[in-house]
Amino acid sequence: MQQEIDIHNENRYAGHQKLFNFIASDGLQSVVADVQAIIQKLIAFQIAIPSWALGTGGTRFGRFSGGGEPRNLEEKIEDVGLLHALNRSSGAISLHIPWDIPENPQAISTLAAQHQLKFDAVNSNTFQDQAGQTLSYKFGSLQHTNKEVRKQAIAHNIEVIKHGIALGSESLTVWLSDGSCFPGQLNFRRAFQNTLESLQEIYAALPENWKIFIEYKAFEPNFYSMTVGDWGQSLLYAKKLGEKAFTLVDLGHHLPNANIEQIVALLLMEGKLAGFHFNDSKYGDDDLTVGSINPYQLFLIFNELVEGMDARNMNHATDLGWMIDASHNVKDPLEDLLQSVEAIMQAYAKSLLVDRNALENAQNENDVVRCQEILQAAYQTDVRALVAEARLRSGAALDPLSMYRGHKIRERLIAKRGQKTVATGL
Ligand SMILES: [Mn+2]
Image (cartoon, rainbow, N blue to C red):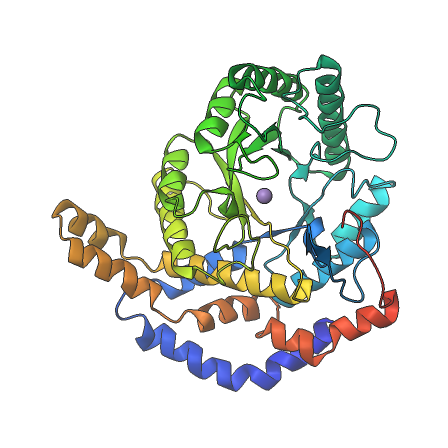
């Protein structure tokens, strides 16, 4: 693969060089920026890929499989390895248990290391019943009125932690579908208390260096109440649990028009922001390609992230967990993930261009017009050549998507795996 990438880059080098020289010399005049420092930050930035995004997603109406989807955990790791070889920005995979139970952790670790991949957060699943499961999660898991169901869900989460330890993962993400569909169904206070007590037992099982991420979601699959429905509820749990507990923000898990950038700024200020599930949406939890609907919002979120992390002297690349959580039914999942990673890198690069001192001065002077000009000068800068230069320097392809298509990678996967394949969990 590396040889093919080198040829691809040689063929595109002259064109890229022209664009990069322009942005490095003239293109950034409207903003204050240290080009070399930005490129180093872009090279260091890695976005984890979830194991469930590698197959074509579906809706409750149906699923239209693509060909050559990964059939098992090994092939999922190969797919992420492929993405990482193309962009050098996808250096981690996030596993979902029980969809991806590593039967042989040693072999799985070795395979991941061959692709230079790390294991990001492990994800538990108490939102569906598995074959042979004793008790049902139909009416919730950690919140359940029946203590035996809660115990089963707690045991599952502890099991997930054990799988994670075996692979070198260092965090557990808990997303609960718990809630109620109709008024009167649930005593909110009791549901919260049950959930908190259950989380406390899971928290007690965390290794010393681990974190637990509490992901919230406004609605679906429950449509009247969600027991971890918004960032306030998640923060309550995280604060009550202790210093290893954090809030995880999934962009699609808000009500329409929520000011996510403000939520992010305040969680960071409180030291309780764990990380991100990136996606985009027009209506709800649409799970669309990152940056496909509202790239300006994505930039504004990154603007708050960079400002907030710098204020706390945090390492952009390692102090928060960055992950894509998207899936849908009309694109090649690998092409979609390449687009998502590119959108994230561009938003991050633009946020690094914001003239922080000028913005602070303008804010202090209440010069609203100037504030907007400063933000938009960064946002409107074409940073594609900067991101491509970071890829070039890290050994990735200048244009990952065209390389993926030009080398007929999907066709090769179909030839190897077959036309009709279904990824576990889908
Ligand atoms: Mn998510």
